[in-house]
Image (cartoon, rainbow, N blue to C red):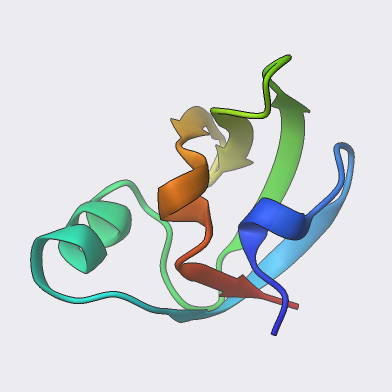
Length: 73
């Protein structure tokens, strides 16, 4: 299983499934990260956290812990 945390800078991936439950999953979905959405990884902070991505035309920063719950292909 490949997660958003494992994606290299400059790659575009598609969300396959969201893991996690309740408020965590709802927060990720509220940010526009849903099944079938394309996500472009723009950059990663020097210490690896957070990850800056482009989703649905806007820029978003996601913590590594949250990115680990987003399965991609």
